[in-house]
Length: 226
Length: 226
DNA sequence: TCCTTTTCTCGTCATTATGACGATAATCCA
DNA sequence: TGGATTATCGTCATAATGACGAGAAAAGGA
Image (cartoon, rainbow over all chains, first blue to last red; front, side, top):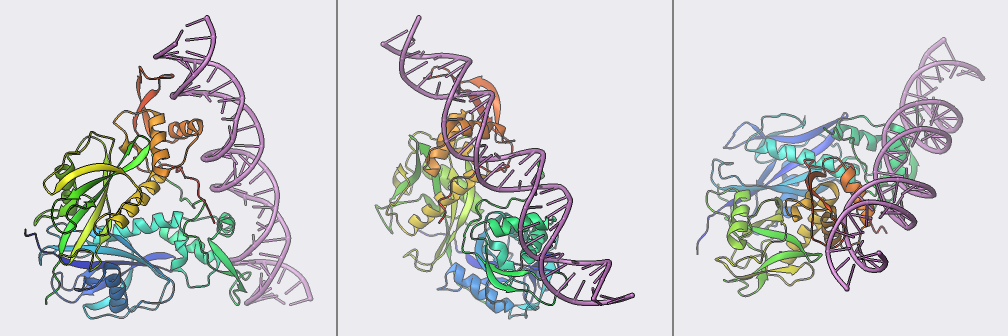
């Protein structure tokens, strides 16, 4: 019995929050196809490599982003027959949420790398769709999990956490109600004991990410129902 | 440039509710490897076939289940190097939710097919894990979407819908509170105008699935928090 | 020093959603 | 006709949320 032959790649939707806006990491392609165009970072899965391992390797290799914290999860697979002109390629997309770090360094396959605000970007392959799916996944995950903290450094203020929500959801949130919700939901955040200093306004207490895997009850965004 | 060669399969977690219990569709393997063992239905993706198309084809071919209603979505991909003794095989798992239909017919690759209550089944490959992920996805989706109706025939009673929740979540739900919730959440269900007849007890009104993609507010199961 | 600005933190109150459960309605069956 | 069964509606206490007032704790300028 014989069956078709495929290549398998991983592609990464790497998101961060900079200056109050949700950004995605893009690389300019350094080889065919789509040479010179912007795309999600990614590459082929090696012969004896697990999918998640390949995703972590590409994240480190191609972006140099391998700091503490952060979050990596599988997003989904994309395998339309014509999605890659080189032949039959199935890509497994991963979603990474990272704190705002220095400008990434370009890697082997990528001539350049840069953060871009999410939106309508004309990316190579079917990467616009993968990006849209990743952004929607991130928006949704912020409702039910404490993952917003993955966008923050290890210690952060409630205001910083709120700004993550505002950036990812694109809506403003009442600081007082958010403070109540974040500090009263069990396992969302935990106090460090230290505070900020030197900033403008009253110093804020610093928190760490809590141990909960799910927010209970969740933190729902306002739905525009029809 | 050369890169490793893979085979790509789709595997299906087909769930339904029978006699108040969540069941999964299994097939007995008719060829090597794992000949004679129970596994999720699935097969190789064809040369010019989209992943979702392959999933629908396998669902129809191998199970004969292609009725109205139901729901099919991508679950995730599994690609550990050793998961298939034949070589490097990545599988894209799909989750199908179907109303309870007559016993499926065996297909080409499957010597037998049968519904089994979900639980610890010693399945071939890594199918136990895929099944567990599928069940967890289904449980979670029932909270935030009107997808419970995918387990029901096109017209159903509120009690039937409630029994879906009870079976999938494995907990009992107050019929009066559930009735209020189902009928008051916009877009969850819509009246047909007809009622059941001939059953025991007061006749129940029949409903169809509503148009909403998301339940707002959601219908959360009781969390056993630690 | 004292006042203003800024941001954090804590409260209050009305509204909504939920869990527990009583009560009535509408059918079948003996 | 009366009992069993299930559907549907209502009531009430509690929990969660949105809107917003007000004090606390810093920096900076007059």
